Length: 84
Image (cartoon, helix red, strand yellow):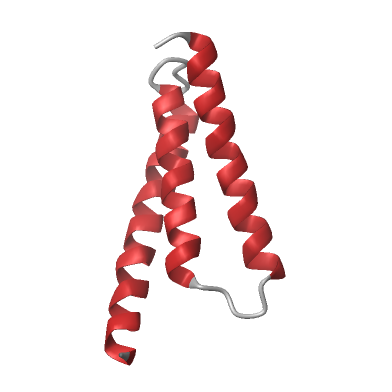
């Protein structure tokens, strides 16, 4: 993958993170499933970008962010399933 494509993918991941953060701060009743999916997608896109333009600190941060988002997604889906 070219560095330019990696940068574009990383910028898309950043945009997804910013969108999720804005959603969390504006929404009167946040959908935790959507929020965690957006965070997971953002982290994955940034990790893909980091596979070309590697930065250890950023990779550790995005890996942790992806794990937290995945755990939050599982928790939110389980809570939604119990309500229905």
